Length: 471
Image (cartoon, rainbow, N blue to C red; front, side):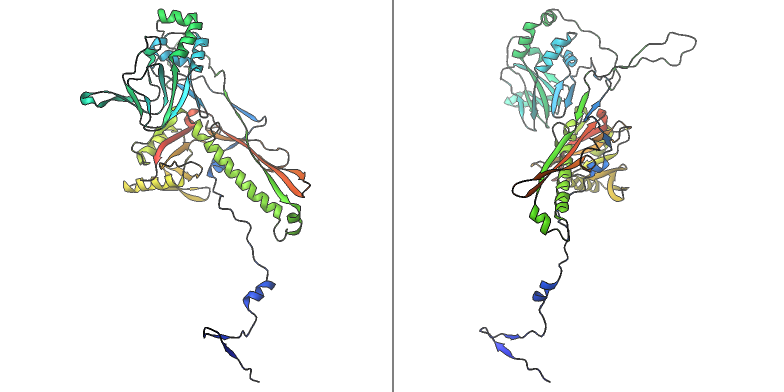
């Protein structure tokens, strides 16, 4: 039997042939679609959360006890930082010639409390010649160029001020005058300023300070180690029965305490969705999985950028280094590792910074090494793995930071803090609590992640700042 095939001519003259079988569009209605779980572009490797050793904080607070540390008599002012807040050590104010030898702790603490913090970026003018000289400027971190008048009405450089330097201390008790110099920033950093008015107000209430200003004399500083800790008296190489020195180890009177931070959100799912559209994938489970991923991403972001607990703000001021020329050169990486020379564990950098490190190494004919780290082949410098962390910000000017750190409690390094065994725990340190069903049939879950990070000793964390990634 022969089946005839008819052809029809359309308006455009093209021939169409009738289908001989069921079309794919119609057949697809009877087929089961193969689906993937919901995908999320915001999920990253989160190397920081993986490399940090996590310490159990049962009381919700972690106290870091350290030896008492500060150095007197070196002519430089020292500071302490808690997150992004920078404070001058009261006793360090005696490095100012005006206060050398002054010993009233309460008055020094009051003067330190009257200092005002100012953060600055590159190219800013902090002091301008000809303006009233009404304050002392204490440089906590960064570099300032000191400019003075030169020939032909041009400014000339009179040197660079670095961490611990100060200017204007002679103006606090002298007659009011004007600045004869200009201070312009070469890098970003922080200064503390003590105004003349605040100094006079404190001096007006302190008889000891007024007496010191009239008749002050310098005192020799106590014995200190190169790290600034009070020296422990020891005796070695002796014979016979000499009297051995007595000693004790002094501690910080107000050690820093880290409280667990929290990232929270409320997950809402309509009961109709949870009841009717739950196969082949559980809607609540998939919603919860993506919510937990987002919370973990936020957790890592906070551990890097938070002004109280973030690593970028908790590195000691002496542990922050500028690049030599802008891009991250091999010399810069060596300097960075030298800040955490006692068994550095990892280097964390933005992916763009890692690419810049590779370019600079290649341009100098140096092959960037690689190591096997948790089953991954990652780039390394001097055997220290370089891990990507997209939470480290890159500024609009194309600069970022590179972190090097030593990890672990036994190594006196950087540790993560959390508490396990919390009610309705879903993952370590993360809970999912059922909050009920509203009158609109919406099911709510409270998702909470508790975390923090602590730097046990200052040299456990070093930061290479102002790293250019665009060149």
